[in-house]
Image 1: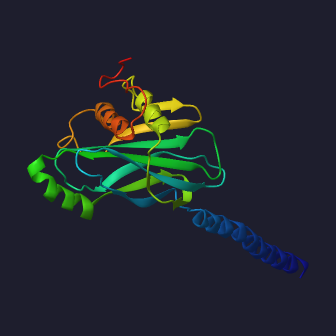
Image 2: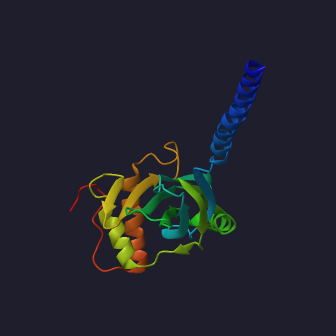
Length: 224
């Protein structure tokens, strides 16, 4: 009789042990499933088109919330709607903070210009007034983004800073507390020149438009 009781207790103990062990295993699986948080967030931006033969520098400010325990990942911008104007010149300039922050502020600049002959101005003006340059900005390791209003950069200080950033020919530059990344907004079939050369031309036009003091660095990367 005693041996049967012992066997019965061992069997019950085994069942209870199985229940206890099964609980944590299920909890781990649930925790793993619940931890699938978004690793990137994309926002749509609409940049207005300037009048023909005049460059504009449009900027949108984005406030991001970084995932807990993470640092801000890469930031990219992609054109989703090309206005298809004559002789377009468009580049993007991404400004991201170098220091780690829970709510970093990003800026994406779109430098836009298209040239048009006098006889084509009415048609070009209509296309520019009714169109826009649409882009998607994607930020890695964030949970959400807040897009602020798009506005035009009219500060000579800002224009001069952009002019001096990429004279080495590099497309990613650290300056102060920020990292600046230069990207072409159009495929090579439409804009074959390197983005830093396109930037130089756009800066020169913006320089004249805003009547900034002095003159830009020049069209050749590395020129001083």
